[in-house]
Length: 600
Ligand SMILES: Nc1ncnc2c1ncn2[C@@H]1O[C@H](COP(=O)(O)OP(=O)(O)OP(=O)(O)O)[C@@H](O)[C@H]1O
Image (tube, rainbow, N blue to C red; front, side):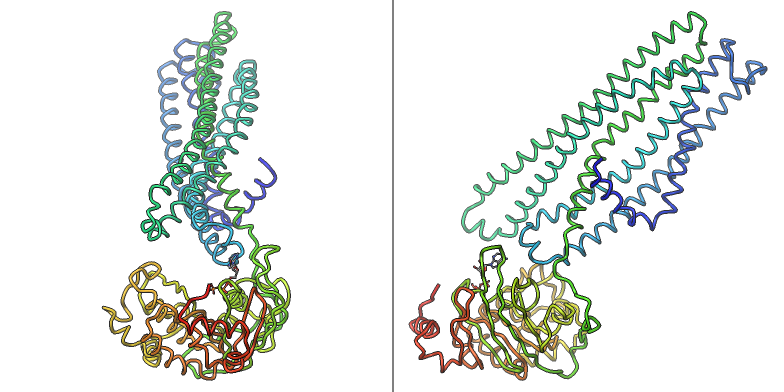
């Protein structure tokens, strides 16, 4: 086991700490269980020794055959009874601890995945992440409940059997012991190969899940563009790679089992040959030989089980490795400890509006990937209560500005100030509570409308209805079969994109933010709904600072300032009237839109 493995295994210890006593007690039970298992061949051998009138253990010496046999048989029954009772308690405890351990790990993995920045999520497909949260955690549960403790039990049993054998007949015991050496080396070597093969299995399974998830998520496009057959071929290719990877592990698994069976047979043959000759030469009794034959078989039972658990253990180690890799991913965007860290978000959005904010971008440069600059030395200021619109061609970096303002990503150069404070110094919850963002793509969670509007805010249904009424979206709510209680499907599948945007606007309005950010917020609505909402948005925008991104220039004519972006650079700034006749990009955009063409 590598030092990385042991470090990762050590990481599991805190998860087990809560069940420490239960686990300790269970581990303690291993010793009596192993002793009871080891004593059985000894008792059987003694029965034969008594029957053949050979030398017996001291506590049987002098007893007549009948009472000696009765004593031996009742001892055997007692040993079996104790062993199986303790084994039952042990298995139950281990399963329970294993389930609790994995539940805690799964919760931590989920929280960690939620806290990881978009830098990470951009890189890892959802399906791959899901595999770590589900299959890998399950593999870990399996290895813990049936593997790790089983292995400890097997090792304890092995040690007890070996010690008993050596103390009964040192020479034969020693020979048996020697057979374990080559076997241990062979198993270790096969184990290393199995581990690599198992990692590949997990990777391929992740890819399979990622492919599956991507196809299901894009089912509309897949069907509309008749990509079913093509995607099936790609999926089958991944499936075939997964099958081959599994075949590799099956081969190694079978090789280990076969090796153990062969060595077990050779050992029994050796005991029979050597022991038989010792019995013939009266160097050993038949009772002792029987004990040895039983021991040599029992000796391989834990080894056989070790081989069976071997698959699970290696699968578990791979799972720990993959879970560890995820948990070790640093959370890049965090709250910094400073004089503002005690600030808390204002959670009661029903209260009076507090104040609007000032936003300053100071020489901000940003790229998602190295050497692909998206924003270049961008500087602008949105004064308190003013409305700034950002326009520019597709891909010019407009939405990126919003992502930076919300600290979903961080600029490589420059800084962003909210009310004079660097947003990195503000607690994330405070920053995000002050910003109300309406995006073009609205994410709807499964649940009812009220829950989707409320999210984490402490707001009553009456307050939600009041806000919706002031926004003029009550007719939409009334059209829903159960109003606020209407259940929405995953990702808002039972709503149109315009309806999802209406909910998104309401979601922001009820939080009473000091800055409103709208990224193509009304783009999916029909002109009449958009016009109604625009009118009501006026009251929402009133006294608030706002950043509005819109391709339809008519919606931003009234903005206090319009910033024109081109390839991440600010190329023009001014009011609609100032820019209209300037002869720059804005003028061209207006001309194109007036001609009814759409520029790309
Ligand atoms: N997560 C990402 N990883 C890498 N590149 C990205 C990512 N998101 C956006 N980009 C790239 O950054 C550039 C700017 O994207 P952005 O979404 O800010 O453009 P935009 O001006 O809002 O475009 P649109 O008007 O189409 O909404 C684009 O070229 C895009 O390909």
